[in-house]
Image (tube, rainbow, N blue to C red):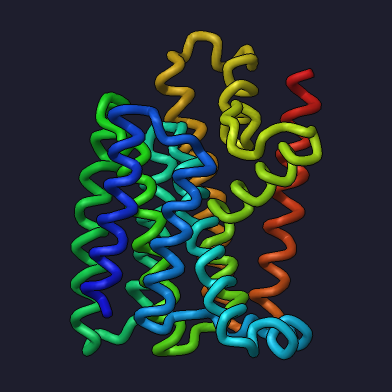
Length: 277
């Protein structure tokens, strides 16, 4: 099963690599390819999401095998695209990936060596990429790297969830940032009658970066350093929420933290948007 996850992640990485080198794959086509890979993987290794602790959804939607497979595949697609979307700042995407992997490394018992070895190996490689990307800004992950990291993290999370049954709200809190970014972006573009796959610079990290460049205190700071500062601010907030989630480990704490995260994201997004006007 873990070998299949790794092979599927490599296929998704190759899709991103082709797009990096040629830029001939339209966004909808790339999303369709990734979704098909996710659909096949979820079906083959039986890692569909069968419950999210919501009575209506669990009973009337996820109780059907095909619906559960479809839902898990869509979640995997969203996470993969979410990682791709936050790959605009130095170290942001890789930093988020490192925080998520460290958190799940703590959840998996030490005796489950095969999962721990995979997570540890990916963690080491991501840390190296983070350092080069954050301090130089010249070595980037590209679509291939962000696709690979998002897909394999999502696959491993669902695999771990099915083995140990981690609370779904806890998982939602851990994966919150890349998922809310992609969901909010798609909704925002659709409401504005725009193609949800067309790129823009209206993301939270984009607004934060532009906001920092307009502040007098940072006028003498280089754009590269402001780029890094943007990543540090978001990563620190993300890390603080993860620490809080781990401290208050119950369904009420998870759901409350998730609700606060959503409100915080929307508040800061529209606050920065209004300031920039």
